[in-house]
Amino acid sequence: NAGVTQTPKFRILKIGQSMTLQCTQDMNHNYMYWYRQDPGMGLKLIYYSVGAGITDKGEVPNGYNVSRSTTEDFPLRLELAAPSQTSVYFCASSIRDSAYEQYFGPGTRLTVT
Amino acid sequence: GQNIDQPTEMTATEGAIVQINCTYQTSGFNGLFWYQQHAGEAPTFLSYNVLDGLEEKGRFSSFLSRSKGYSYLLLKELQMKDSASYLCAASDSNYQLIWGAGTKLIIKP
Image: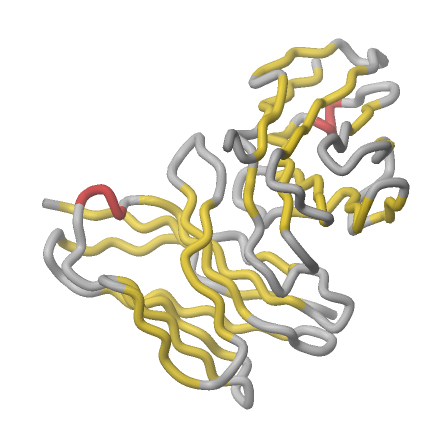
């Protein structure tokens, strides 16, 4: 099993550009999450999904969108990138809700200039 | 509000024991997690406590007191590879994880 995979690993965007961060898991997990991690701060939940076709906002959803058309894939879309979105983005999955272990992808380091 | 507090940084010596504390305030509680995160890498699961008491797993142990909103992670026989950040996270009543900022543990020879 590959676990949770994310692409790209690194990306530099100009202000106003858009991009999609890809996330795929092969563990047949229902729950998937997108977090951002800024230096000196805890992980912040952007969006999460409890199954295909179902998504919900987390703590910091503004400027992002998600979709969940399959169990495996949970892409994160950044529209009109801003410097405040410079961060490390982690995708994670779990078999059930957050009372269960989460498995993380390797992360995407995004810089917006 | 919901909050997790843990020390920013700790230093310990190879072969010694270190205890990393975490206090939490959440709306409801469905368990306390500890994750390890090496620099530039993703967090990986270490432990989960939902009942009061100590859970031991090899060199690592985790303790929970629900009445005090307190947990600690105990690392024994420290090795250089234990140099990492240790993240405390609590699951609230909505089964959302509230994360602490992490404790950077520096191991000196």
